[in-house]
Image (tube, rainbow, N blue to C red; front, side):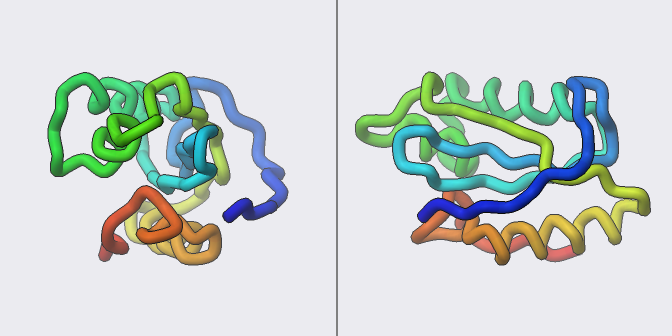
Length: 114
């Protein structure tokens, strides 16, 4: 599934307190994440999961599945959050559901709780 939405915030690798998405360019499935530190650090953490072969990590499982690789990894900022941890996590859940990031249509296994 391909979803369309407008990103109105501006991002750099040092943008903090954000929601981001990782998309597989091979199958268009999504992973939605949030962090209170730099966007670049959060994305790098997920990229570093891939060679570690940790089956508990959905990003690793997806990009190591048949006909997928790290070359299919695409990441973007979605929203800069002006609020605390609970608010950011609530906003993340909204994006997870609105953009279809849960299996079987997305990379994520279960929704997170705040």
